[in-house]
Each structure stands twice: as C-alpha cells, then as structure tokens.
Image (tube, rainbow, N blue to C red):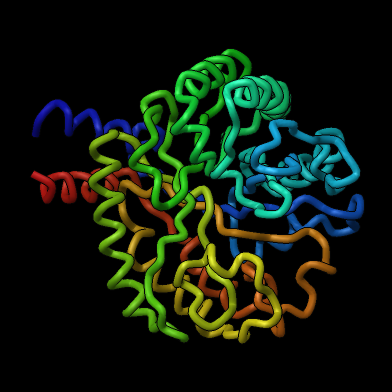
Amino acid sequence: MSLKRFLFIVCLCSSVALFSQYRKIGGVNFASAEHGPQPESGIPALKRINANWVALTPFAYMDDKTDPKIHFRTERNWWADIPENMESVILDARKFGMKLMLKPHFWVEGSGWAGTLTFDEAGWLEWEKNYEVFILEMADLAQRHKMEMFCFATELKSVVKNRPEFMDAIIKKIRERYKGKLLYAANWDDYHRIPFWDQLDYIGVDAYFPVTESVTPSVEEVRTIWRDFALQLRDFSYKKRKQIIFTEYGYRSIDKPVWKQWEIEWVSDSLNVNLQAQVNSYEGLFQAIWDEPWFAGGFLWKWYPEKVHYTGLVANSDYTPQQKPAEKTIRKWYSKEYTYELQRKRTENWLNQTR
C-alpha cells in the first residue's frame, strides 16, 4: 500500500480507538423555536430516531439578492435564532448527550436561496463587511459553547465563485476564534468546484441529488441510482483525502420526493401526501451510502421543536419525518455501530478498487 493510501486510512480512522464501538453522525437540522422557550424543546423526542448530533440553524435575512445588507436580531427572526435564546436549546441538547454543530443560514426575500447573490464591486465589499460581523459572532457562539462543529456557510455558490480571496480570509479569521471542526455546506451540484476544501476538516454536501421521477420510487430504484452518485462522492473524498458529511439531506412525504427538490420548495400542502415514498427514499439512500467508509454521516432536513410545525403531519407534505413512518427507518440506520477494525478493512477495500 502506498504511503498516500495509508495516511488516508489513518485520517479516516484515527479518531476511533481500536475495536471500540462508534456510531456515525446521525444528525438533524434543528429548526429554531419560533415563539419562545418550549415546555418540550424537541430535543428529547430525537431519541425516537436515536439521533446523536444536532445542527442549530439560525437565520439571517436579506431583502434581495442585489442588496448587500444583512439583517439579524430583527422582528423577522424566530425566537431561538438569537444567540442568548439559543442557549436553552444548547443546554437541553447537552443534557441528552447530543453533539452540536452551528450552521447559520441566509434567507433572501422573494427567492429564499442565497446561492445567486449579485453585487457590483461596492456591493460585494459592503456584503463582505456585513457577513464578517455576522459570521464571527456565530463563531464566537460556537466556541463559547464548545460546539464540536461549525458550518460557516451554506450554498453560497456565487460568493465562492466571485470572491474566493474573501472566503480564504474569512476561514482564517474563523480559525483564530473557533477551535472545533470547520465545514462548508456545498450544494449537490457544486461541491467539486469549491477551492478551499483543504482548509476545512470535512467536505460538506447538501445532498439533494435528483434521483428519479417515480411517484413512489422503490427502495431498489433509489439505491441503484444513488450508487452512481455515491461512486462520484467516493472518488472525490479520496482525491481530497477527507470524509464527506451530508450537511443536509432528506425527502418530503410526497409524490416524486427524490426528483429536483428545489423546484417544489415553494409548494406545500397542494402536493399529494405519500408517506411510503418518503420511507422508500430514505431506505434506498441509506442502503447506498451509510456503510461507506468515506461517509461520516449526515444531518437530515429537518426537525421542529414546536408542535404547531409538525403536529398532524400524517396529512402534511413537509420534509420532517416527525410522527411519520420514516422515523422507524431513520432510527434503524442511526443506531448502527461500527468498530475501528471494520472501518479500516472497508477503507482498504474501496481504496484498492480505485487503483
């Protein structure tokens, strides 16, 4: 075995003691509480799926993709977006043994997605200044509470393309303040274009790959098509010598849940509810990727702390698996345990296949 391959195996396995049992990241993207502290924060319910990680997802707001102002601590923010309010959720997560990732988001009015921000030079400079203030406050929050991971940006496609020097600089500034594992969440079609993976600890991918247009895709169909994407991710992981985390993944309980999910972001209850399609989609995905050594785990989208957002979702088309049959499927895979030795053998096997 070459030194390069040996060092990659060590990189994948060094954090796990020999023959000790460990679980992959079985996480959720945890929505902020909208209306204030909750009698049941939503954290205890995560035991139903045997989750072991929580990604906190506070939002900042932009009025338009051409307006560089960033709004935070405003009336638009949900209650637990605000750091001092978030602390009650952090304490609850720690009480129940959860590890934490802080994963700030932007919401652009009128479009939602922050991947197409467009400014002139003066606008870019103003946005960079505003972003630095916001993200360093978030880095301080993550460090203060010793959160294990910090995902400093999500799907900022045009920023990465147009302002690479700024991204390099902000990573260095974050590293000066935050000492945990640092990630970026790349869109599924963009992860191979990110120039700064070598400065981060994992490759983060928001895994909304378009799989099939089937109304109720079978487990076999999802698994078979997903394996093609998995091979691409595997090769990229080896090339970069870093494991991949799905910083977001998940499927709505609707017809055609694994096809071009971004096209139905604005559509809700008008879609046909299909609970079995959600179950099959999760199961097919898990069968394709969960046991792979390059895959460190992931954070499903998403989990709500307030009953108003998930009660009665047997008749709702949202992403959350709460109180749906998909909970059982997720629990099965989130409960899997591995040993260092098994990880080493699997890593050697797939590295040999890439020769």
